[in-house]
Length: 187
Image (tube, rainbow, N blue to C red; front, side, top):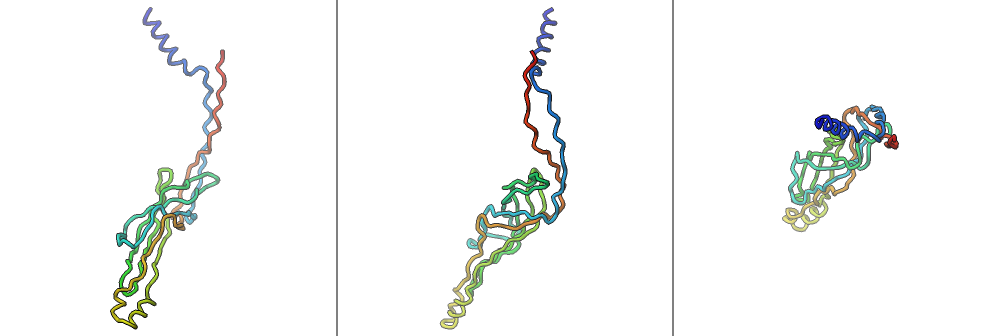
């Protein structure tokens, strides 16, 4: 008898949470679309780059982020602020005889919704040369040009970068779910 009462009590305990709950709503249909190669993706630098400290190296990675959300059929597929990665392709530090600094880089990919999407794009900056000063100094004192340098290249934090999707990307979008409706429990 005690065993029977225990089994009934367990069954009621397990079944009790089900009473008074609404029936599950039908799941919204998943739609699919394509983020096309060549789609423009505005980025901005998430870190600054400079040749001042002579620490930049070819192949070094740098961070950017999307400046605005990218949509397909009215649905966000790359949220604003998604991390993007670039790579330094050329570095030239400022030097003697008025040589200016230079930085060239390329956009590699963006990460969005657990996926890495290939991208193309480039960024560069060149410091100002000191050629006029060198020519003037050399005219007066030939050794002076040896000590004249150009300026360093600098790409500050927040600098806009134009980038483009490099491959067609199939996306599946689940539209926002309808609000949950709870019906009162039957008495």
